[in-house]
Image 1 (spheres, rainbow, N blue to C red):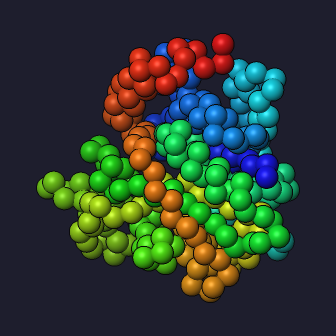
Image 2: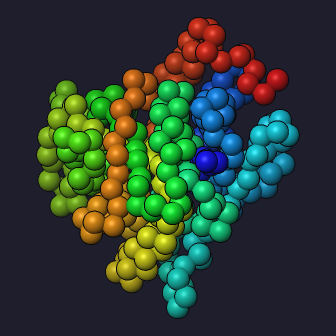
Length: 302
């Protein structure tokens, strides 16, 4: 079974203060995504599709795409605000993208095989991709609704420089996800991990809680489910300039309706990523250490 990696790179990076998707972290100017593609290739993924914003397109085509050897299949689609269901128009005050689920939907016309989804600014580790690809290679488009995700411990995913968004997971004894809630403001407070609700109330979280870092695996039927969910979402949230439809919300709806189930795959890898500029030195050091250990060449693409 052929598999594709869908890379979400259209985020605005407002907390980071720049285009972290194309920022250099490796010794030869590699981005975090370069390491993800390198790892995914070794794990068996054969094709790579980026979701980018319209303002990234020129630099992406003229600079970023040219770094890859010709045998690596790299494509892109654009997440634009006006990609809405018929009958809807973008409000004048809308600036933010419509969320990660909408970003995935942009690839509906170009992906027709089992695929994984990642964030462009997150490092997941090679074993995570091997675990994911092994699962996807055994799925079939004729058996829809058999999804998976790689989960991480919450305490290994927070930033000491500000809040982060994480999908908080509930997992049953068989290893299936029973529910997932997106918490958009998780942070450290007096040595404790907490989240802030929409009413600004603060709640504690178990540091060992399994969280989603947007490393998901889907069969192509997921696109239709996103489309159905997005139509409802846009009807209810068109005038809210900050509302976004997240992948975890769509997954949670499908689990509750019995239309899908999601296996939670355990990985021994450590996650790291950049949410804020202050995170960058830690990520630079982590990648340098992996290069020094020989896991990666000094220059990935020769």
